[in-house]
Length: 187
Ligand code: PRP
Image (tube, rainbow, N blue to C red; front, side):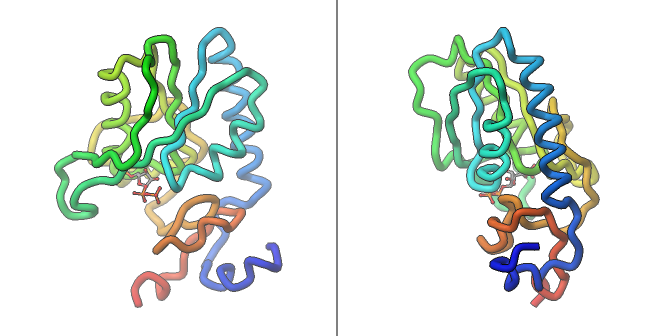
């Protein structure tokens, strides 16, 4: 582990996915995208903020051309209300999506509400195609029936941070995915 992360490393109970494993996972997904999108017009759509790190690493590994964009969303009534409604905080500002093959880039899929909503939203807004990538998948938490097209790794229902994922806006810059010590989020 890197020295400058010492303070946050102490809050991590266990490294779930190391830097090297993440690199291998991202390389594997990039190779699949290279293959599947070589004759398409790829637009990578980063869902802020958790997907920033993954998106940055993934796009550098692609051999095919792509454009990039970002959206920021939040779900209403986080944790309690299961309305499935999503609040768009930063939208795509593009005139015409009809020639774009959009690949939504997510750090994690949990209930599935964010990705299923975004896929519908972008299709309604005229995208030529919409598919999804989730680095981490917690299938045991699903509330709506949605399966991402590309998944990095299925994980158990643990509180994970790092590689973009936060707890109270902390830990996003850790270079690995770790399980947070329970005393950090129960205090
Ligand atoms: C997380 C994650 C997804 C969403 C997944 O974002 O990045 O966008 O939750 O959950 P779901 O499958 O239950 O919809 P979060 O709201 O934590 O925002 P952040 O990425 O800015 O941390």
